[in-house]
Image 1: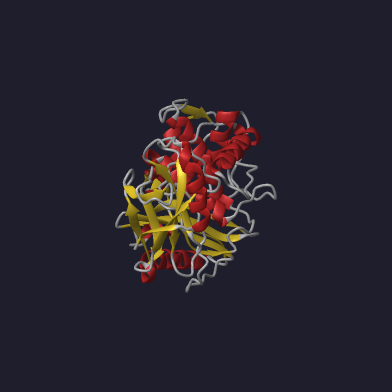
Image 2: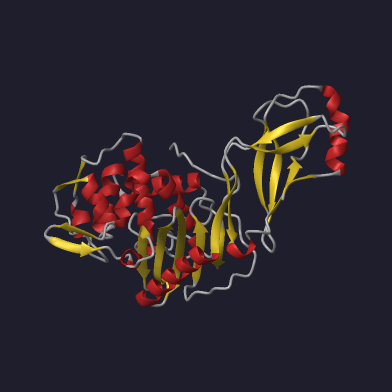
Length: 376
């Protein structure tokens, strides 16, 4: 399965180790910046729990991937089996047995109505069975880099083999938003009617004035109320995931509070544009022997507004760097230092070929004796 991951910085999901002045009623929670992957806040974010209907984010992504690679179209139709028709536990789209339903309508049934029956229709028509469909889900989870997740069904119905973490759900949501923007609008639709039954989207963030446009709620008696939510404010997008809220009201209020806090307390700063000159790396003790360093991506960082004027950067040659090297090779790291947070590291590349062997001895002396500060 070919999965393209669009990134802005080299290291995603950098943990903010500073004490965050916020708390939540959720048992597990996380807030990340959707562009940089930076973690603004986390609480038990790697604790395994049951994602409930937040599982449907992955179910939707399997369909999005097949739409993107051309193996499906929105106008293709899927046949409803008796098993899918009989599925009435939990939420339902109210499909009819032996009816052909367009893929686009099934997606709305999954995303807007949270229909377990719609999930089963999709799983059976794509893979023949829900069990085989879950293999696709787990393959994509591995490709994305979800570390503590396993899917055993397409619906999120309770199973000890269907588990995840809020950190993984946030990463999964980030991947969906960044890689399938042409389909993401489905998560912002507030209602959908099927079989004469109009149902409203269960995501409470869509009805608040905070720029929310997705993603998915979940609830199981064993794990409480959960929500993966995303909102956009002035071109900046945050993703908040919480699970283990005791009531739907606390889920709504708690998620809203987390998103508003993230927008209020943090901002994104672009340090360098893609392909711009970041600095120079000396190749010897002679000041004229240097290679210019550039970046292959926009270097954007997420930082507390209170610390945005305290950013420092240092260029560090990569470990065991040897000459010769080619234009475009990674030869150094930009270390970004923000007080009381873990440093971030961005790869820097050479702007030219360097093949003079005479640089070697003096260059290694330089590596061990100094580092270059290039940014105030």
